[in-house]
Picture 1 (cartoon, rainbow over the protein chains, first blue to last red):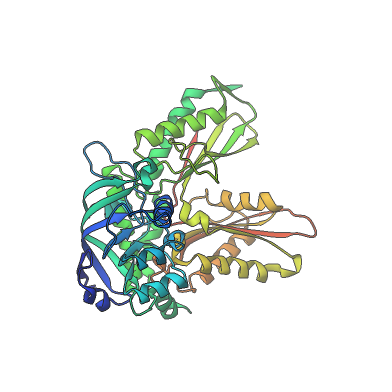
Picture 2: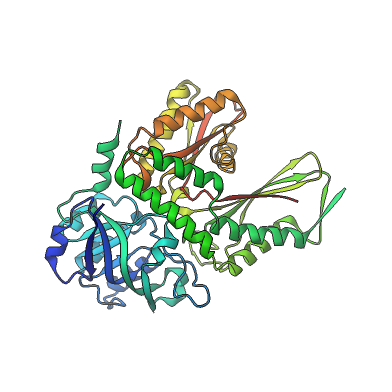
Length: 184
Length: 280
């Protein structure tokens, strides 16, 4: 199957608009990691009127809590975690300029609506294929919330990270489309 | 009376933790390979191939196949003629987990308190179930259970009149709600009967059986096959990308229950069905 090669952060809105639910992509560029505890803390900072630890404009967040790096390695295994746990926080971050999310599993309707409203995109990576995905991570820098350990925010350079467009900017949901296609 | 030493248990458990996370069991790999041959959806097929490749990388490089290296769950069959010396069984199991997770560079995923949520920093405490059995063996079954699939598990107290139809409806509903979140293809553990807490335990216990192995009770084995075939008609497919492989196995364990009761528990396991066994 052919895969679209895309670059992040999204400096060009048209790239997002052209992505369709069910497209297989490989992603290269810079992304930021954050999961449950990091999202909670980011929301608290926004609430308190403070600046987020990185400029979120046009960026992509990867929902992941990697295993520790073995000596000589930059990171351990790093596959996606269940995105729905971040649903509570996603619309707020999308309103602040976030353009993409990588995770696995369903998003709720308010996230899907917010993706459409903000011309953003949600990618699904293959849950559990953490050893393989780690090969596409080229550099890792911890930039905030170090005390959260695996949940700290890391800036990552990735190359040909494999993913699938689940929710596109037109409001389509690949999980629903795929289900309808194969349900007996 | 056989004596088993504390340090012996620690050493076994520590290596079980690493092996469970680095080496996908042959039973699961075989199930992936036959699923790839039968899967109807091209994207589903591709996902399965990616999982096989991932398992091969994890094994060759001795890195975890999944970043969620799980909560360590033990099912221990302790022979009544076996004497553990040098310390307690619970301490030995936790010490083994502490060592295995540290030496294997596995992720610490346990928080001390469900409200305050501070990471304990060594993946303990484990979840430990002990059954007293005849003989003098100490059999330790261990699984590294991931959070994604565990979160989508459910239990319901049905009415006896709901019968098999009600049981099926609850199982399929659970799998539909879970969809891609639980990382299909799944291993579905079902507990039927018992009471509230034993029903959940039966569902969990069923997941320790190797993938592909049917219940020894023929009637229950038939139920497993029936559930499996209907689950794979749902269309969810590998990772929810559509297809005919939503489950690679369904396990059922049953238990006697009160005349008023029909509890059903569904404990979902992701495709990384990590389970190890050692007999000391």
